[in-house]
Image (cartoon, rainbow, N blue to C red; front, side, top):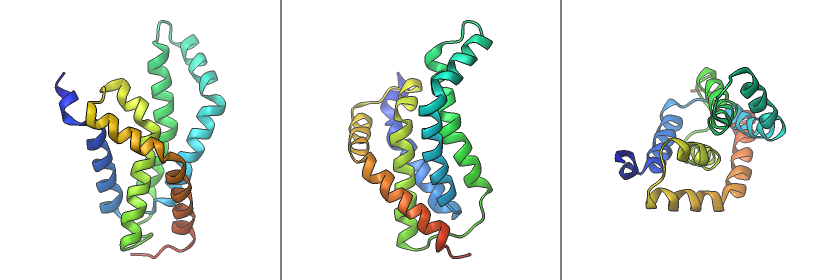
Length: 155
């Protein structure tokens, strides 16, 4: 298929990084919302998917899982990000923060991205590297989120 050759995962990672770096909005609240979304999905995702399957006869369970996960972990936090004020960290800290946030989103949403566009060899390698360090990325991201919330600079 044509999208296998596009290195989908690398493209998503680059697009998210550029988005977070260029818009210069507060990433902290959105980053914490991603963590909350994962927690809510882990606690209630199966119940929500089963409820949706009862409401929508014949809906594929895997697709519903992906949609619920993406709404909780990507959609709502990005909505919060776009509605946040400009400012936040600056300089090299902004680059690190944007890289951490985009890496975290890619590592968490990789299985959803793979559902729609299977990875090529390079994409799988990138996901494996990011997933290997997901815990460290999440910890560093949470710390930078708190730092962003507590010590931001208005632009």
